[in-house]
Figure (spheres, rainbow, N blue to C red):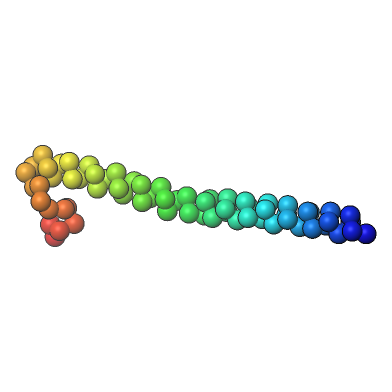
Length: 66
């Protein structure tokens, strides 16, 4: 009887570990688009900073030029 209980406990722990992994994968897939958009925005901001630097605007950010 004790062996059966221990086996069930081991199965529960394994299932919980798998659930944690699946939740992590779900969260990563759900936010992948957002992460890609933020990365693209950061790259665009870097390009804009370089262009502004080339034009002589060194102390400003392009968002402050409005």
